Each structure stands twice: as structure tokens, then as C-alpha cells.
Amino acid sequence: MQIITISGLDGSGKSTQARLLQQYLHTRGARTRYFNATMFSVANLLTLGQKRSADGKTRDVTQATPWAIRLRAVALFIDALRFRIWMSWLSGMRGVTHVISDRYFYDTIINIAYLSKKTYMPWFRALIVRPTHAFLLSLPPDAIMTRDAAPAQGMDYLMHKDILYRDYANTFDMHRIDGDRPQNVIADDLRTAV
Image: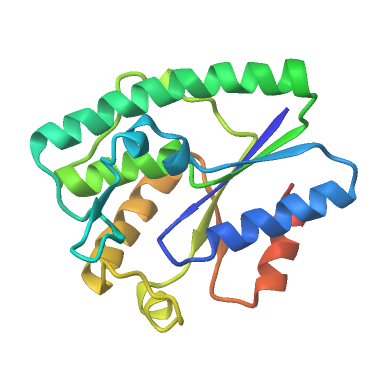
């Protein structure tokens, strides 16, 4: 089973490209599953990933207490184990050939590094299943902020996260894809690489 991950800043087009790649692979006879590390996480179940505003809507967290950061690290460990079990189930019981990941555990590591304001590398890194293809959809923060659905976290957040993604890209062997191009051109690059 191939694991194809697409990482990058909020608003860079990860979800769109993951869905396009999944559709393409379906036309080629592949049995795929969509995966999102944030939605999969036990931290999401415990609402560590989001807070509610006065109007009841969720908003992404840009700051966290040391205790909340530790809980995120524990959740990441649990998630890495759960993912291994899920992968075994998919390959054995469901015959899935490809998992397309919109965000991966690498994005979680980068988020913990952002929140803690220091480099973070989990001691259990070997438990994280290494993807067959890991992509970093790279788009400048100022280009993201001009989009219709610009992230609410703002420019400062995107700039700091962009630095972290560039720093961690080599560590996680992420292949950089230029996200500042038309969607179909990006999709063609991903298809070619896969």
C-alpha cells in the first residue's frame, strides 16, 4: 500500500490536491482512502486542536500552554500507533492500494514546534509510518493571504509556519511542489511524481 502525503501551510491547496489525486487514482483502478491527520487525531476528539469562539464556531489554536503542548505530543504518539493499526486493517480487510493524506503527522510535529517556539522531534519518530511519497505544497504566505478563504490566523502565523516547513522538509524527505501555479499544473506534477 502506498502512502502519499501532502503537507503545507493552511490555505496552500492541500485538500484540493489530495482530492484531485484521489480522483485520478480512482480512474486508474486504485482503491484509495482519504486521510487527514488532524481529523484522525485523538487531540481533535479532545478539542485540543480547536477552540470555540463566542459565536460557537471553531477557530484554530495559535498559542498553547506547556501542558496543552505536552498533551499534543502524547496524542501524536497515540495517533502514530492507531495509524499503524488502521493501515493493517485497510491493507488486509479492505484491499486499499493508496492512502492519500491531506496533512500528515509531519504537520502535527511542525505545529507542536510552532506552539512550543522550539524545535520538536518526537522520541518515537520511528513509529510514524514513512510515506511512499511525501510532498510539501509550497506557497508564499502573502499569496495565501490574497485568496478568497485566507486563514484567520493571519500573516505572522503563516510566515513562522513557512519557516518551520522549510526547516523540516529535508528532515522528513518532503519533495517540494510549487503551489503558486494553476491547480491543474500542480495536479499534473503530483500525478507524474506518483
